[in-house]
Length: 324
Image (cartoon, rainbow, N blue to C red; front, side, top):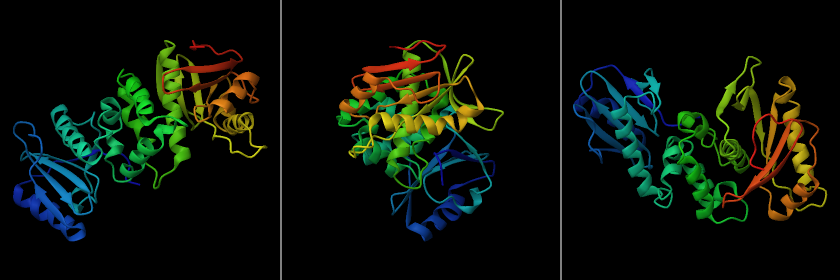
């Protein structure tokens, strides 16, 4: 899979003639391509071009005689195969800002409804324009209200836009955004689960906690968050079907059991956070009324609505603040 958009950094000498020969020509042969000027001025001292493919792919290229940066959601031409990759944060600020302005402009043409949510669009920009995530991520936001059931798209996207505008996850943008857009196809269950991590982050941050996402452990596991010295693993049950035996409580317990047998077994004392945001009102009322265990503690079970309302309960000794 291609993964999120990152710059490729070349230390070779480039010129307009070489761009046409080594970049435009192979892309034109493969897809049909046109070399055009940038929509926005590149940094001082840099030349820039857009490579627009007939299949909708896009690549950006800028150079200054000593170095060059490539950013694209298309096939990478062979002269750039062995170049190093740099995220927007790792590239020079002026190059990163130019590249992102070009991408924002492209997104405004392709999905203008999405750019109304500035913080959301900026945060997920590396996947909203990526080779393997641009269709699936936009479909998820457009047609599935970012995972909220029976919810208005505007209210749902505003919920995440408001949270991301706080900047609390900016330092972890690639880590968090990449999870949503690196599937080879449209996987609604996985994408809902990804947003469960954003819901858990909001739950923790709104209660006044400092969080570190995606914690790599010596055990070989990766745990979703650390709050002070406490690990937090997030799971999001699938919405129960309408079959009588498949209840909301059953879905909750099944999801918790899966985590207990994996990451949590290796890290006793970690908190299991179960995001039930995919549950509809009647399903959630039953869970909240019964407040069932899942065979593991400490446990936090919660559910958000797009207006920011959150309900939930905890079991065992949860060593950090919660908003309920």
